Image (cartoon, rainbow, N blue to C red):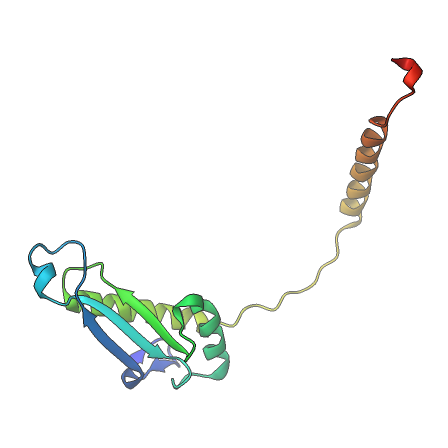
Length: 140
């Protein structure tokens, strides 16, 4: 189990990792060792609350396949272990962010002074535009 919050944890059986060759730093090692990690997390099968799953799918966006599998790719480090930890940490951070319920918006009304100011500026703008109108042809 991978702890996310005090009440939420991810089951390691829901995580599938594939190691592939990475481009970038690593010298000759780059051509021989598969250090990049492609982490796959099946959101729909995961043991997470339904509201967290929905928010996670929305947060992940294009990183989720049509089957509901979240793909996280990590190739920033030279070692497989560091890339694996980085990918898992990114997954944990994403799930942690999805576990927070968004605050409900409290509708407010504009203050009387703000309303008055808005109407005054609209009237001023209207008068400026009215003065731009076509004048009398005999004036030219």
